[in-house]
Length: 332
Length: 263
Picture (cartoon, rainbow over the protein chains, first blue to last red):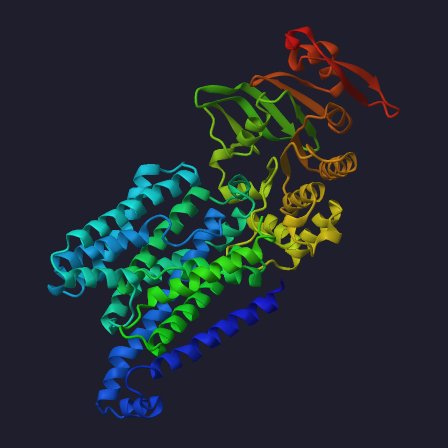
């Protein structure tokens, strides 16, 4: 797979993001001319439409891009690190940790005190999950031990979320918790974006430097170490970066599944299976997929608004199955 | 000049003594064959000498300095390590896989330059794998895979090469190809320690043999001095016919277990 074709792929994904971004800005319950509304904005005229554009659709589209990119990037990094195409960004419990803390906030109604509490609690939950995994496994555990610890953390978080739903004080709270865990972009605002951005960017930056180490890991941990890669440091750098970025994403939009699993898997053959090249491509691909899904939930004529996480799982899971069947001959 | 030296190295792994005060210096231009039965500590010694495993006692000196005090990337430039049954986890193209050997020489985001490409090409040609460069690494045969992984190590231009059973599970032709590549590497000014099970191959290609038993270095010297009837019996528990071929190198053909082991 030569570099020119990889570049072409990246450009195409980038162009697709820009195109879908504009489509996303024009789609919603109210239809109005994007061009005229932007002109009105530039002329400092206030109208319902400028408000809808700036306060609702712009943040919604931007958060979709950022969240999708995070999920794609973290999925690619995690799969490269664990050398397993079945790994997802949340495999160590950062997603469910974030979800659990957000659910606790929803359960006790803390979010009515300050809307900031929900995303902040999510980020704290994600970090706490990783810290717990680290505390249980330490520095020189095998990757299997770490994954098992992650599975345990995931199970504990899922059990506590079930408990919260079970004991919820009102049907309204049950519905709120349940819908939130399904993933939703319709309620995000610009302040949400500003809040998620710092930790997300730190996470992205930490992952950006991991490409070479992930490439080296294609030959196993011993060989990677012999080439001067500090495998243990690389591992925790990726875990921490994933907790920061995925934590922020889940805290803002809820649990959106399958993007981090499907996108790296789909793009891997197109970048010659190289983990380093996959990172950036997956980030772009993840943004494309979440934008598409979020456009689709707005277009689908359902009685209740469809949660975006439901759609990504509905489309992602069968597609993932198809990819596995198709690629089982190539993958070792 | 001593390039790499194990000094009184001892290693305990979960209560089992894997290495017991092993001393092994490696000079420039020297090919040392590390021999001994399964579980004698060959792999452990190579890992320790590659700086991948900390020791309980003793130390490993790389160019006169404790190997653990070298920056890991600098160590990676000087010392290449070829894992036993090395894994290839993704179906990478062969030339991209061999390119991974350049990692110690390349900063994170840089693509390989002309010099890197040149080294990759040389490594592929040295190991007779140039014709495989467009292939997918995971679809190669065992012998091809082994040579490609050797090319990966050589592409990093190490001064020292530590290889863990590089010819186990290869057919005779591939065994000779790999041993020839290793000999070439050493004759071109490198130095290598290679763990081997094939005693004839070890005797034919290596300058020195180091014999390990239960983590202890039994003896070290020229192949003719190390491989004797008495040692084959006491260390390996075998009887073998020893003969010299036309080139004067020792040939070892085991034919029976000694009484001790049969019991």
